[in-house]
Image 1 (cartoon, rainbow, N blue to C red):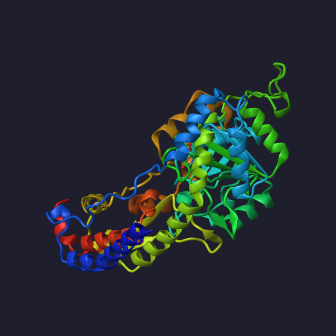
Image 2 (cartoon, rainbow, N blue to C red; image 1 turned 90 degrees about the horizontal axis):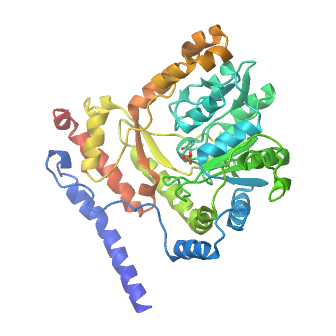
Image 3 (cartoon, rainbow, N blue to C red; image 1 turned 180 degrees about the horizontal axis):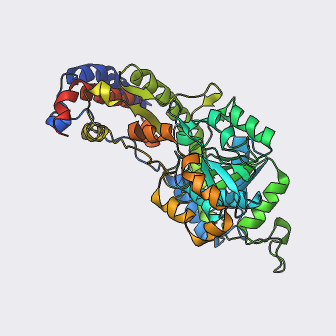
Length: 441
Ligand SMILES: *Cc1c(COP(=O)(O)O)cnc(C)c1O
């Protein structure tokens, strides 16, 4: 008891002293110009684990039940994740890419179809469309929120459109009301790519439970992590059964462990018992981590929005909880004496703030052009559709966003509030010395 109180007091004293130390450093020169870095301590590391994970993994190992057909961890995780999100059904898959792949197949997206996607996302969102030999049709990004611009969605719909995959990028939530409204009117299923948005909310309900299906990733960088892993949420029982069969070599729920007969084609995209055991342990921490990121993210925005030239990603009014897989803002070099973003990022890193430039535009990746020029695509699509595709899927707002974006990763929001102060302090310091720093470029 005494010890706990003592260390508590010490922590409080340290916190009380922090603002003083911070202001003493305010006149400091940027670390890139030889000054002392704002941060001497690293941000919280990722992943987070302890004896809970050790015990879960060892127990699974010793049980000898390593796959879902012999153990019950995968089933338990599916039930727990469905409960946590309020979804009717959850199907665990071997990764987020396969969760999307399962959904496209369960929704019968076929070669020659079109699927609407954003250009500002991880490549897997687009790759799964190409794996169906379908055509990805890009809708430009709303630079204020970094999400698909719902006002440009309807113009992208054609009579070939078989699915819309909006992404809740960075754990922020896309404009679900507008997207779902258009999809409903045009009778097109929505697959929410919630691979970065575990526990995010739209009007108090969890992201990933609004569309025909929602997809999650548990890859090592994601906010819920088993190294690799994924899940599909759906409220549609028939879709769930088709998804289950597809992820299990075409062998449906009723066929498991029986004779070798199949309802459809499929793959083996099952999650292992080890990953599920790890996820069950990680789930015990998720709510606390979500609260910490959310509070730190909102506080960081209150600091950064006061700095000229820094524009934190906004949320739509319906987003009631941002999961902050990424903390994203736009950097305007004009407010930093013309300091190029690359040098700004280098200067931030020198201050002990690891920051990244984020995605490049997906719609103009050369490999896409090559894919559309391939034998299969030439056979599947009318010449006119392929010819008009580059112009049809041009995304000028996104091109510009990709030049201005800055990302901080989710683990940086898991520490004390004073970590957020240090981020703002480093940016302010760089801004004060932007002219000098520019000469380095
Ligand atoms: C991570 C991610 C995926 C793919 O998930 P994996 O588990 O890596 O296969 C898909 N979409 C988005 C937006 C992601 O961030």
